[in-house]
Amino acid sequence: MQPLFSTKKLPEKQVTRALHCGRFSFSKLLGMLSVSAVLGLAGCSDPSGPGTGQSSDGINADIGAAATSGVTYYVSATGSDANRGTSPSQSWRSIGKVNSKVFSPGDKILFQAGAVFSGRLFFDAADRGTVAGPTTVSSYGTGRATISAGNGTAILLYNTAGFAITNLVVVGSGRTVNTESGVNVYTDLGGNIKLNYIRIDSVDASGFGDYGIVIGGWNNSTGYNDVRVTYSSAYDNGLAGISTYAQSAYSHQNFYFGHLKSYRNSGVPGLSFNSGNGIV
Image (cartoon, rainbow, N blue to C red):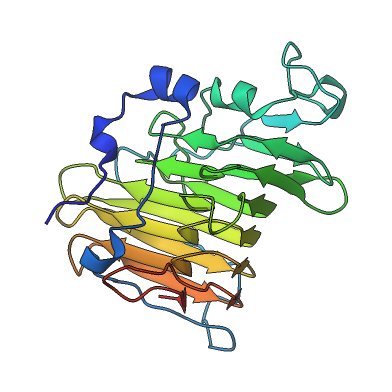
């Protein structure tokens, strides 16, 4: 069976930047999904140490492998989208400005801690990172920035990898109102490839109708490799707190989930399949 919604219907970067990708919901999809991940739950051993694992494998050609320090961009509540964005005093102001920019390996997008930014962050294959130079989305200053997604997704990574999402709070409008997920990492690329390197660390996800954090693939055996979700919390969401899925049972590999909290993900009434899981 095919997923009820496919991002193959979406245009690429130019239009998706303006439209924020439209609706991206998997509320009715979970019953068709096969979960494929190796889970290291809180308290389990991890040979590379919690939250610090680095893959020793090579990465796929579409992601690249060149090491680079990249450029650091800042977003603040008092910034201006007319600014360069490359220092706190020249910070951008909006998620819309971030979505209009194409990022390179090693780039960092840092949001002002303590501030709230409304909208959906969207990154696609043009925003590629690498194992040696991941593209990082995080906070600067003391504490964490909040991405307020309303009824949509807070952060969507579509057909891309080489990303680190760290030290952020993502909130939706509430599990009975919101229709999407907090952090959604998804690929439907052809060729049964594995996109390498995703890090989600110290992220707090709540108030979403679907998942707090979800990683999925839907095109035969296409999926992700070298994924770590650590020191994060998912609560007060609908379908589940933290989840993975794929079309094939062997789409994903080398996943580590550790030092996580997932609670009060109460499920969605009236579905024909089980929902309300913590970590699946």
